Image (cartoon, rainbow over all chains, first blue to last red; front, side, top):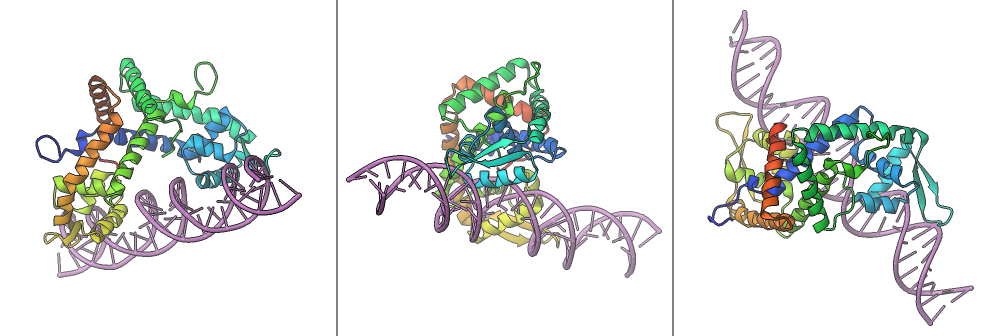
Length: 153
Length: 153
DNA sequence: GGAATATAGTTTCCTAGTCAACAAAGGGAG
DNA sequence: CTCCCTTTGTTGACTAGGAAACTATATTCC
């Protein structure tokens, strides 16, 4: 209830608009990626590997905000597509190492361009100043809540 | 690739921060709703019914940005919880009418309060001015892309 | 060194969606 | 009226992910 004793409207909440816009952006990006036969989660994993390779699955789980189980299956799919390689960690009998394959490494700049285009398309309606404001505010919220992973959904 | 010929960073994209913050807010709200044995999607359907009752499933599908199949199953769950009623539309042999049950109608203000609290908690780190800015910018993006549904995930 | 504990990855079961096929009912053209 | 196409809701097959149990390996503590 709000101060008037009436139930607050759904659209009164910033969370409502966040979800709507975020969903739109993610969905639009997913559509772009379709042509490359890659999902958003797959892209995020490839992008993480691109910056820090090789990486253990449990580290990816932390960075991507997913469970180890999900990472295991996601890696399965990327290995099946020959975009990622999985090998044993010589230093730890339990651990694996995930890395981009040559094909995967070759694909990353392609996908990064799609990500750039998607961002430009989604936020192109804003002025440069508004984009700066939005960026600052989002980072402030993320910092206030200690967010650090890169969520995929 | 960006102007330097390097692959743009994941965190360069506004979409990245949008997703991270939006996910956090939705997840926090889901946790709050757990105690009431209601999911976010269930809440959104109840909230829609609260403002326009009775409503046909296919209309809810439009408003909530979900398929008719998903609405069908979601309604099943809410009917099973006795929060929503499903009846035949006397004017159209194909159509149904969904409405809140008495228990459902009683629960809405409760859940609305949780939504208010969640929003306050998620965006309380911002100044009043920043909240206004964020609201304005999000609505501008939504308008620019013709978004009107109320996404649930 | 050996036992208890912790960690890494996989697997199974579950949930909540999509998509596509479907049956039932409506509506228009002839 | 009848045929044809559309619309409505449901269902079944499938997907991606979470939770928890499980196996194998490390590590720690005595």
